[in-house]
Length: 103
Image (cartoon, rainbow, N blue to C red):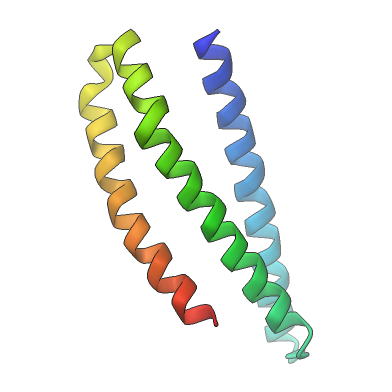
């Protein structure tokens, strides 16, 4: 069951990343074409803010519940989990700084 959940989360994370890549590419295209319409800027800012909030929440959930449960079942993953937890700490500060810069 746990492996199925991990795979499902993997697919969902890929989906989110693809949607973000698409939104960023659309923004790049609009900027290259000189379309700096006021309507695009707030929408993209809101998307980024919401995405950052969701990503931060996702990481906090992993750190608090998922990683400890995973380590109980697969203790050999400890070095990887430790690395991911450290990366989450760095990303948390970057996301906070980015969100402050958006508005």
